[in-house]
Every structure is written in C-alpha cells, then in structure tokens.
Image: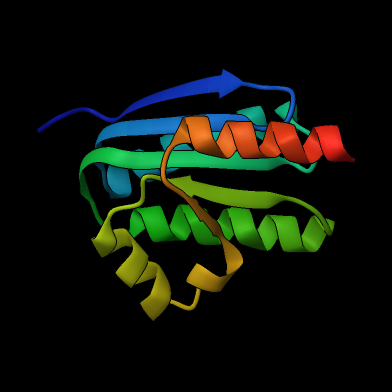
Length: 122
C-alpha cells in the first residue's frame, strides 16, 4: 500500500495540488483538509489538480472534486483544472456529470502558462 502524498505549489494565478500514491476513503479526509488549507491561496480560487500519479483511487476522488465544485458554485467563483487526467478518470467524470464542470490540461505547466497568459490579457 502506497501512502497518499500531497504536494502543493502556489502560483499567483492558481494553486497546484499533486497527489500520488493511494487515495481511498481513509485518505479522503486528509485530501479534503489539504484543499481547505490552500483554498484562499489563489484568486477564485483556481485549483489545478494533478492526479495522474495516483496508483489507486476509489470514489473518494470524485467526492473531493464534487465537494470542491459545490463549494465554488456556492461561493459564486472558482475553477477546477485537471492536469494529465487519465482516460479512466475522464470516463468516471463523464459518468458522474462532473466533466462539464472542470477544465482539462495536458500538464500542470501548460495549465499554469495558459492562466498566466489569460491574466496578462486581462
């Protein structure tokens, strides 16, 4: 069993959360608490999740993403970007009707660069 590892990187335009290892019911509370701790690090907030290095995840990952999207909707702002999403995760998001509420990016670097360009244009 690979322990859940969570790293965060704060950018002016967004906060990047990289999760690796296993995210199951036991790790969900820790992952949610981590998201809560960095919620105000970026305007919006704009949260970029890189979950591609999760070796295992169950419905807990969907629960965390759904809770984040629900909070953003309640607060009236925010954006979720999934960097390097696996085909399986995209399929699960499609099946749960969450896919239309997130943006997809081929990498964290691309997501951050696109957000920097967007900010520069505004």
